[in-house]
Image 1 (tube, helix red, strand yellow):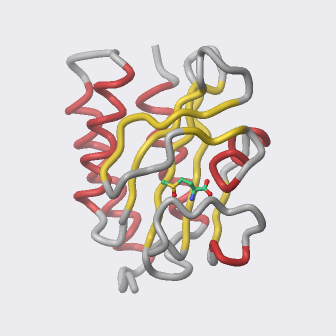
Image 2 (tube, rainbow, N blue to C red):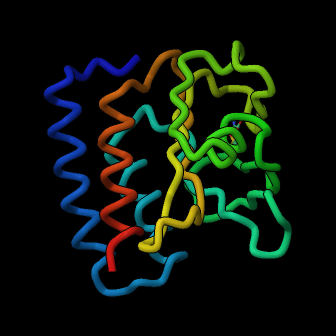
Length: 161
Ligand code: SME
C-alpha cells in the first residue's frame, strides 16, 4: 500500500512533471513522448505496476490499440466502451477505480491488478488521441489527486503546441 501523504504525492508529481517536460522537449514525436512518460512515471511511483498508453486506432473506428508501456504484456485491442480503458475513451472522462473486480466489464490483462486509473489524452486540437492507464497491485491506490496531476501531465505533454 502506498504510504505517501497527499503532500508527498503532490511533490512527487510536481518533480516528475518537471523531469518529463525536460525529457520530452527534444521531440514532438508521439511514440517517443509516450514511451518517455511511461518510463518516468513508472520509475517515480513504485506502486505503478502497469503504466502505459492505449492509442485510438487510426484504422478501426471506436477501438483502442496498445501503445508504449512499462509492465507485463497488455491486451492488444480494447473496443471503446469495454473495460476501464474503453470506458474512459467512450466517455472522455478519467476513470478512478478503487477495486477493479467490482468494475463491470473490467478487462483482466494481468490478474495481479487490483486498482486502476485511466486518463483520456487529448491533442492540441482537443481530439482524443489515446488513454493513459495505470494499474496497481494494491486496492484503492489512486484518488482525485492522481487524477488532477496525471490530467495536467497529459495536457502539458500532448495538448500544447
Ligand atoms: N484493465 C484494463 C485493460 C488494460 S490492462 O490492464 C493493461 C481495462 O479494463 O481497461
